[in-house]
Amino acid sequence: MDAIDRHILSILQEDASLSIADIAAQVGLSQTPCWKRIQRLEASGVLQGRVALLSPEKLGLGLSVYVSIVAGEHSDAWLDRFTRSVAAMPEVVEFYRMAGDVDYMLRVVVSDMIAFDEFYKRLIAVAPLRNVVSRFAMERIKATTALPLETAPPIAFPRARRVAEEAVAG
Amino acid sequence: MDAIDRHILSILQEDASLSIADIAAQVGLSQTPCWKRIQRLEASGVLQGRVALLSPEKLGLGLSVYVSIVAGEHSDAWLDRFTRSVAAMPEVVEFYRMAGDVDYMLRVVVSDMIAFDEFYKRLIAVAPLRNVVSRFAMERIKATTALPLETAPPIAFPRARRVAEEAVAG
DNA sequence: TCTGAAATTTTGTTGTC
DNA sequence: GACAACAAAATTTCAGA
Image (tube, rainbow over all chains, first blue to last red; front, side):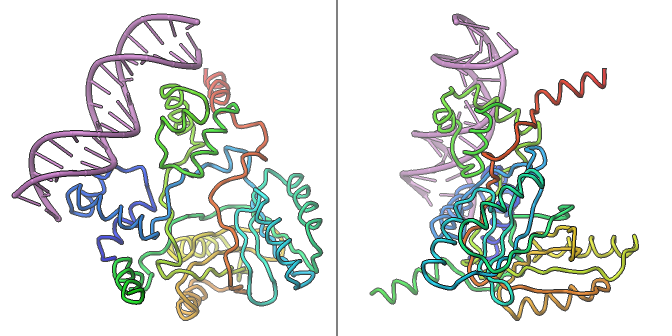
């Protein structure tokens, strides 16, 4: 995972429709070594896959709502039920367990307030909740899938890691 | 934008590395009409692009922090300065203007608490803020780029829209 | 006007140095 | 890591419903 690998990743996380020839030219390599690096990044799991990004507005799904939840219980049964049910809802595009004053944070994508209210009723029916706060987004100023590679620490070397793992296994 | 277009979009937003032959087979079309539909969806802007998804954990960027902000002022100058500066920070992967008790919501991706604190200092130096609350994610339960197409309203027909626009223009 | 089969061109992949 | 041969895929063309 050297600077060239990072350069390749930064290009691909912005535009994965580029040809290997294009990417190779940008990073100053010929096609084969560039292709081999991409294969290695995929095999190591750093490159998880390629997806198409759709326009929420053009699909009539322009309303994002942040929902913070305080759990109703902390039993294993409650947790399992809540986690599975909420993760299975397609409107939930982000779902994190939090530290601090709220237990869970969601981002929910819906078409409008009516649709959100319909979602909300299904959400509170899933399992008992102590508190739910919904905050509505008025304007999307920035939303990217690109991670800040320039701020990533100099760890995570797929090759070095594999060597280390083999040393442990052997 | 019929059911087949939606089917194509739902496949591509899960995996954009599939060949047109694969997609065509899944939606029950031959390559050419499937390819033409994808071209049309790209031209209409519903399909915005293809990106590679990277592993935050493997890159040492496993900490997500939700930051809610109450603005310090509401002047045009403040707003412009704040919006531009925050959007330009690579750690900020989501940035929405909100309705209600908070003015802005961010999701920030960093390597650890130290890195977040460093980011936080830069953030509060950008422009005067009345209140900032940071909530730390402990566990990512779900995070997808796939929009809930099954819940999208039956609007947004790129072709029909073009016809309507031409009718207005003519 | 939309579909599908085949030809063409571009791109991805493998082998050799 | 580069270059050349090979394989596969995307794109265009064209015939038919």
